[in-house]
Length: 214
Ligand code: SAH
Image (tube, rainbow, N blue to C red; front, side, top):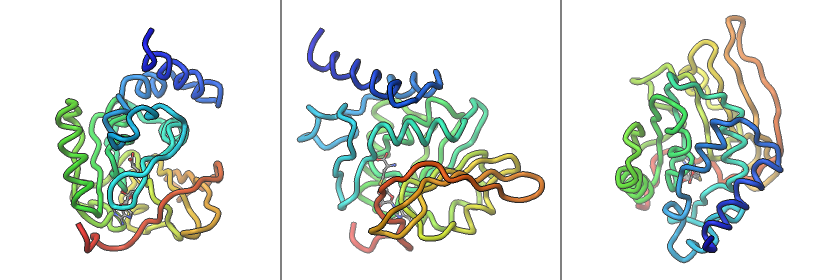
């Protein structure tokens, strides 16, 4: 087996060892070629379990955190998923293997365009990449069965809670921009919103408005 094959085997093993057990999630992680989502200079270490810089000063999340958030979302094949923070498009690609449809919003034009063409080339045709401010969600297509936010919010964005379907689940990192953040899971029930704190995480900040730079 070549180096890449070994790295991918170790990658899958590490996810299992860290506790990812949902078979569909593991399959999705196995299927999506991460080397196409990192910058070319990092292609050799694409399967290392760490976050990496992408354009516009942003990051592609660590594979374990992508798998963990995806597992916590309990995505079913008929679900429509909203993602805030497209970045490289990697998390959206993983979700697209599990859901009927993924809508993902990014505030940087460069990242949105890059992710859109990457996802198209790789054949992930059930993902729609939109340029815009994720704090407002995408009300025209609401409600969503699942919402995932991949940038840290200081407070729960009310528009996103409004766009969550009944029985819906939202996973988001919450906390100060440069400080300790927790992954939080919100579930919308008939009686209101249930909140559960998951694991400590470190994400780039969720910032308001479309980015002024490209
Ligand atoms: N899910 C990405 C990780 C992206 S990092 C991946 O798999 O690669 C978080 C992303 O959120 C960044 O690209 C950042 O520009 C974006 N972001 C931050 N605030 C945002 C907002 N208000 N609306 C949309 N995107 C936002």
